[in-house]
Amino acid sequence: MDKIWLKNYPEGMPAEIDADQFRSIPDLLDKLFVKFADKPAYHNLGRTLSYAELEQLSRAFAAFLQGLPGMTRGERVAVMSPNLLQYPVVMFGILRAGMTVVNVNPLYTPRELEHQLKDSGAKAIVIVENFAQSLQQVISRTAVEHVITTQIGDLLPVPKRWLVNFVIKHVKKMVPAWHIDKAITLRAALVRGSSARFDPVDVKSEEIAFLQYTGGTTGVAKGAMLSHRNILANLEQTGIWISVSFKEAAEIVIAPLPMYHIFCLTSTLSFMKWGSLSVLITNPRDLPALVKEMANWKFTTMTGVNTLFNGLLNTPGFAQIDFSALKVVVGGGAAVQKPVAERWQQVTGHYLTEAYGLTETSPGVCCVPLGAPWDGSVGLPLPSTGVSIRDESFNELPVWTGAGDIEKHTGELCVRGPQVMKGYWNNPVETADVLRAGWLKTGDIGHLDDQGRVTITDRKKDMILVSGFNVYPTEVESVVVAHPGVLECAVVAVPDEKSGEAVKVVIVRKDLNLTKEDVIEHCRAQLTSYKLPRQVEFRDVLPKTPIGKILRRELREAIKTERIVLPE
Image 1 (tube, rainbow, N blue to C red):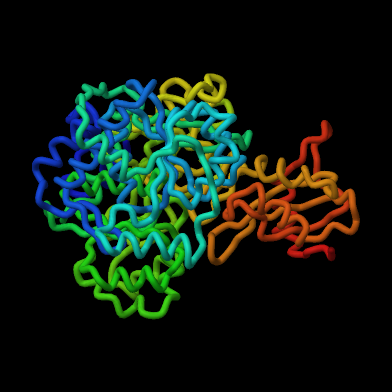
Image 2 (image 1 turned 90 degrees about the horizontal axis):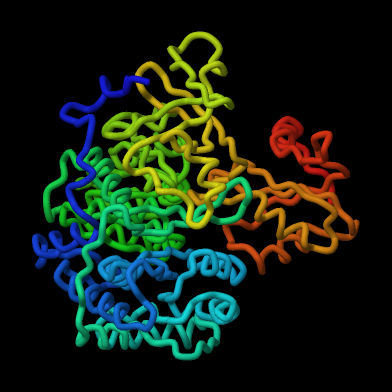
């Protein structure tokens, strides 16, 4: 299909980008560290790291990794941490050592953590002490040989470091007791690395930078292999789209989304190309604290998800923030809802710019032009990106002109471009299922109109999107059905004002005394909080195919039409 969207590109926007400006992410970093050496790079919990300090600390960590037994080029290193200064330090250190970053959600239960560590084959992990007990429970069943622990305040100056760490551990008691043999602290690792030899690695563009885990129709998390070129291409694609008014070493970015999430990860790297300062928010759920932090800065840029924007709009003090310097606010991870977009514009005086992407595309695919109001679409494909709407037989469907039966123009969105992943780690079957003839089958259903705008209307996969995080029904169902009182169950998405979508489980009981509370308590020990069922309904039967497969789509439709919750 011709790139019909190019006719509606903003003035001066190129149709193609150069995905090979830099050999690798370390190549880019080396140039940024020199160019912006004395400029602030990251701020968190009251301390700011300059680009020069970030270079020194990440080099020390890279040297430390290179000195560990068995840690050679290409080895996987897991990082399990919220947004702290430690995150960019260790992430860039891993990449500069020629190794691969495996981002791990710090809220994972031991079961979830074990799967990701075993699947990735990670030999080392950097973990915040608060989560070390989970690692302790599973480490013996993984390939992990080296454990580097850090406390929340470790990169803060004395005496604040001592105070923060004492309060977290002994006053708030947020660090469950743990013991892992031969674990080393990050501060000790940095001291060792600062006096060790660092051997710069000439990383190739096609080497894997990140194993970024995502799910699928099976509900089993898979590692998307994102090469250095994938990431660098998307930095350029997204950066050139949103940086129209950016000035070097002048932008201040509020970064409330976790860096282990691909959206925040790539956007933060993109802003670094401008020598920007990123203000990392450790706990974005504490909205009053977030509003207070935002009020301290004349920030110019922000990324977030619909639920965060909605929460901020309903938090006292937000409307009084000075938004005069604001240039761009990008919403991704989940659809931006019209009421939220409209109210955001009214309160801040700036539009929310909606973007679309997925882990497998590093993640950017489409974005609404800057300054355009909400229109229900996810915008136009980014430079060097191709999109196509395909039917079940992979035939390309025609664009929608606004007339006729839209269903005839609706199919699976397929994407190609330099940002598309190499495939899934050690999973050729799933890779072959989603990569076909140079196209990535996204699993998202939608249409392309004659203006080149992409609109997402459904998901081929039964994935549930909770505050921008993927929840896969099969995974939740496998946990629920393990309860002795459950005969069978099905998990579906239901609308939720706070999180966009929420998890609902419909159960056929084996034990008629089973309650909603029993189910949720059972799940709590096995699932991260955003995956927990928010609604539990009991039924006598579930809709099924003739061969016994549960029909989730039919169940969703029944729930929509009935709007009746059966009594427990």
